[in-house]
Amino acid sequence: MKPLYHIGFGDDHGARYALLPGDPGRVEKIAAYLDNPRFYSQQREYTAWLGELSGETVMVMSTGMGGPSTAIGVEELYMTGVRNFIRIGTTGGIALDVIGGDVVIANGAIRMDGTPNEYVPVEFPAVANIDITNALIAGAKALDMRWHCGIVHCKDSFYGQHSPARMPVSYELEQKWQAWKKAGTLASEMESSTLYILCQILGARAGCVLNVVWNQERANAGLDNPEVHDTTRAIRVAIEAVRLLIEQDK
Image 1 (tube, rainbow, N blue to C red):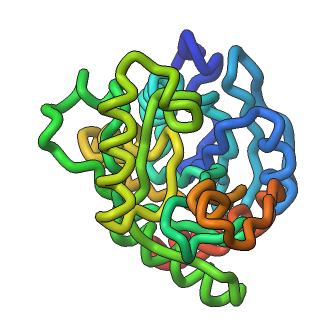
Image 2: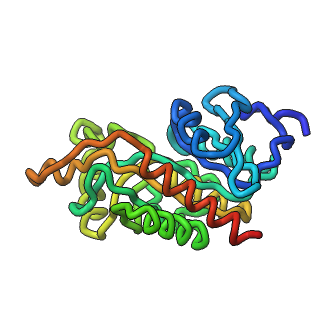
């Protein structure tokens, strides 16, 4: 296979499992948890490393921020033979019991983003694969992490969330935010919905584990609100999940 236009490589890597951070700067950190980590490719926002777990090749590739670049990366990774995708990202809490430093495992996403609308009607749900979700939960339990599993909010505009009052559509953003809160949404991020919809269509498996950076609703309520940027917990949970999936798949 010739190198694909956006990610810059073909199917010679042999990986069926991929870990997907958004930030290219996190790829090497995640790959360090694999055996024999090594640089593989870099083009645009797609930086890729390879390593091994339990005898299987595993790829770590960044997707950039948001749905469009995630969709391109996942589409092309699938073309090269990847069939299992786990996003490792960051998130801001919404539910008051979601605290900075916690791990959120997203079993479904609210589709407030635009990219999936060019794949399926808006009524179609964005849902994680149950095998991957269960493996992430098992990983969090095995590592004795503080974790939550549930629905996350997925949007296209970071500042639409954090500065909604200055937006011409503030009436919509603020009212829907209150609806997400009342419905028990755990946290907010920007890529899971696209990942889930694409993998559903492609016949691949997808899951998502997130590090909670902070919680604006806890701040608004005057509650303790630690700010934690270290993604190590989410990375370790994802590594344990991939290890378990490989053993199950064998």
